[in-house]
Length: 344
Image (cartoon, rainbow, N blue to C red; front, side):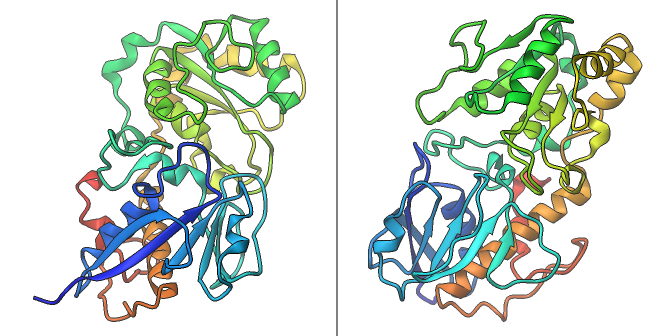
């Protein structure tokens, strides 16, 4: 049997409670590497000059002190742009692009909030992913729990329109705020400075609500975070505001589209119409967060990300066969997600 090869991945400038040894990227690469021949063993840790590749985030400049010849990959879930220089060879960001680009791959933040690889939830910290089946199916057995009106879970107070929306909708019925902004129910779902574990607490909390105010921090093309995903996975009808290209990621029929609302009457009127009409609410409730095509796109994107990282690390994986059956272009690493039991 051939000996396994080793890929050392260093991480720096990531968010609070990010675990460099066990995270979305190490799980993605390990899942793919195990299926290659010979296999590739993946070891993650704090970035240093001995790593094969370095993945860095938007929360510091440590990456600039590392050797320029070391291949670097920038990932951001924040509303900022690509990085260049000092060995940066790939940017993983949220912006849409119109043409193929070897130095950029659209990789929206919400992908990291789903458990694609059967993560050990006792080990993975932030984000703690939610089950994929919560995103692809709706559970009508939980309808009896929907006895509360609307939830609001926000820790960033810097979006004035989102702040106004909370106060506007509160004029119609009480909106329960479980985050640090306008909190009116206490610390039920608080989970520490980095939010570690808060995703699962948030999911359970939202299951009691018909609606959830799911406003992004800002409205930028492609900037779709976990907010809509979490609300849908919990069976809420999201009241969504943010990404002007939101329809490219999710089905707008599953929510109340608040992107054009500019007054209390517009917001309250739209919500009231759905709140007072069970049939219209159920129609939106029954639209899952992800349909078959969206799951297929996610699989291809994750596989393409792994392929590019292996290539940057110097591993030739061009002989790996594509897996048929996925919609759109085949991808050489499709088996790593196709065989994952969480995609059943």
